[in-house]
Image (cartoon, one colour):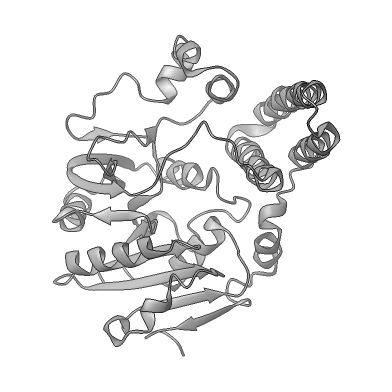
Amino acid sequence: MLLSIVIINYNSGEKLHQCVDALMAETSDIETEMIVVNNASEDGSTDFLQDPKYSGFTRILNEIPLGYSFAANQGFIRSKGRYVLFSNPDMIVQEGTVQRMLGHMRGDPSLGAVSGYYLTPDLAFDKYYNRFPSALSLFLGIYLPRAIAARFRSYRRYHMMDVSFAEETEVEQPAGAFMMVDREVFGSEFIGPEFGLMFGDVEAAWKIRLAGRNIKVFKDSPVIHNHVRNTMKRSPDISEEYLYTTDYFVGMSNFFRKNHGIMRFMQVKVLFGLMLALTSLGLFLRELFVLGNPFRVLWYRQRILWNFLIGRNPLYEPARKLSEEGAHFSKSRIIGPFLL
């Protein structure tokens, strides 16, 4: 098997159908398997896969949401291809992109992965690439306005603001939304089970670096990221915001603990723990004086701080428990040509 394509789906609606059909058209003459990992979606987004047209697919149906990293490992373990393409369901591959990405991978043994050249729905370049983060670069991005943060070299370097991407570019850490990897780099596991949604792609890129391989993005491999980016709007559901904020901070601390040693890990804990405490106090006072719900805000913020300090991620607790048991499929059903 030359290529495996793994798509992790969670309530993606019609976008999953568009993504699958585009990938099928692109790989009709390539020895390919397609694996869709459905994380307990409730919107019927995978119903179309019951059509005989998709009978060659493998479907992994998780009974409970197990998060991106766990689902990516499920797809990776089940796949057979020398190269594995991980795709978000909101990606629309353009004509010839998969073949060219394969050509780059097969033609350059120094490559551990290639990333799609991301475009917005209006075909503008979508710079979804970074260098590996430092604690300072992340701090600047979280707590300062972009215009002020961009005055700092650490922030500019992290966001690759010195690179035009006008031609093939070596990148340290592309977003994992559409990335083809060489299976030989990873062994039996794609992403460590301690990661949820955030920083899993950073961990995967770090493994490629440790293997002495490179990652590149080529302008001849465009893919449309068909999402609505709304980074300034805060979730109206504070409980949902609490879960995803916790996932970000715990994923960040796990990355530094695993890859940068105990001293850097403790620096991250102290720096971001202090800032979480201060911002929680600020939010509490803001809600108090605008007649909001300050104690509810404080309740959720102190939970974020506590989970960050102890390294607990409630959003992916079920996945963590299954990982500890070594049971990647105990809460799943598998439908497809590889079902024994």
